[in-house]
Length: 114
Image 1 (cartoon, rainbow, N blue to C red):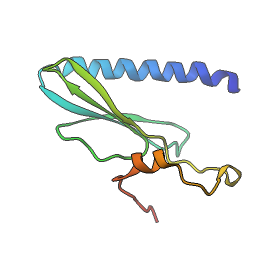
Image 2 (cartoon, rainbow, N blue to C red):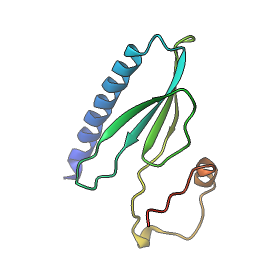
Image 3 (cartoon, rainbow, N blue to C red):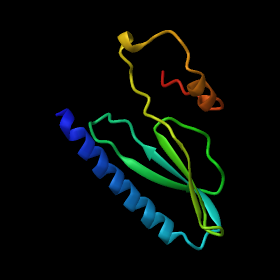
Image 4 (cartoon, helix red, strand yellow):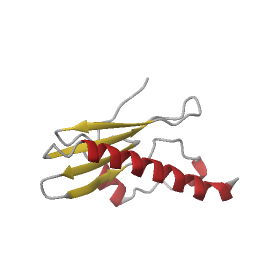
């Protein structure tokens, strides 16, 4: 099963790249904008991906990628790629903080689903 993960990731990546390409091509008239790629949690074992176009830089959220498109200067830049919020087995927890993760997560909203 694990030998299939690499090709599966490659195909998902190619699909997302094609979708982003279509969105960028269809919005060439806009001077600049952000694309927020939202990946839904697999509650029903189906992962859904949505693209949201925004005029302002969005807040950082888990399960998202963010791109800045500047058509005037011909620039496309990935701003972030944040992982899904998934449970981590207790045996993998070290009790130590990771400075880089702390810095990149600053300013992220915290939601309590309870």
